[in-house]
Image (cartoon, rainbow, N blue to C red; front, top):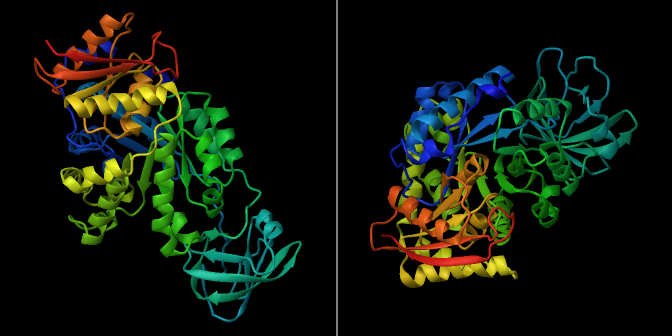
Length: 491
């Protein structure tokens, strides 16, 4: 019922009755919606300030809440005439301890503490661990982290129904606090029954990306892709050490990836997180798959109108590393200054990309060309554009594959992503340097070149007499083929 209520403007409407709105930066931005950004007016303001994709966090809110926000985003999309991506971030398994008799205890360093299956309210000596999978998978010496890593336990004895642990780092512990087990692969699927229900609901509403939590193995990605069945891109959240160990196999299957530094920072030593971030970004870039850096980027702006200098540097580092997008979480979902946070992130990205060192580092970190004809054409498009100083590279793609290949090259020229598919245009919203645009079907090379020139001029990328590099797959509409390259002069 709600799916039919999420229409978008038709392709013809996007090219005619609108004013061109383009970003003057390449790195994209994701903003999370929540209580602080729950109206059409605020969503539009955040989009105009710089948000390219909006995230819906399915750890909070009802289906009705999320459906209403999707409708609001599509209303803004129609008004501004630009494709907007939507990321549905499913909750995944939440591992938690049970409840305490007084709601709270203090665990003393050096003492013992039991985790068991008994649902009786706990005390300073024991508490329920309602996850037999953890008890089964744990071994002597396994570390257990409680309350986002504030407390640390080590398993000393194991029985079928409980674990005896030594408290290595104590402190206060209250009801239902989270449990992290960094040392072992848990026999727990990434998708819970709640996640499956959420996905069945949201996929019918037409979203672009699924944020997949708790990924440990490639099989977790394959399961989500089977459920999505091509209706949305899978964005794996790298937040488990086991996922980092299986990075190459996971990246081979996923459509895009997020460096989710929240749980990753709990389960990995803090000094490892920056190196893991760089490794994931580098590996994703080599494969030409969009990569997002997320969590605590402008955390202080939840309660303050400006960030710390360290936070500004954190955003800049992600931009220098070549991330496709950076993300705001609580800053825009529950913070006091959602507009200021988006505006600040936009300013930081734009300033970094104006720096000559950014361009030099971007060129120096470009991965080797793909060993395929499609990869060679994408590399040639970037080289030709650089040589002639083209104002834009126009890509025609029904699935986004041609556009992804060109974006992998990180060209100096902006990328105009032309597609007859509204879903593909929205998915392009997360891809580095791409200005997505829905156009009608084309049937010849001559028509393709003419359409690219008209679109580049209408969108404000070039003027009469300037040059545009055009690339596509021929025959048109054939997914995965990039085999045509032209240089056109705008008339």
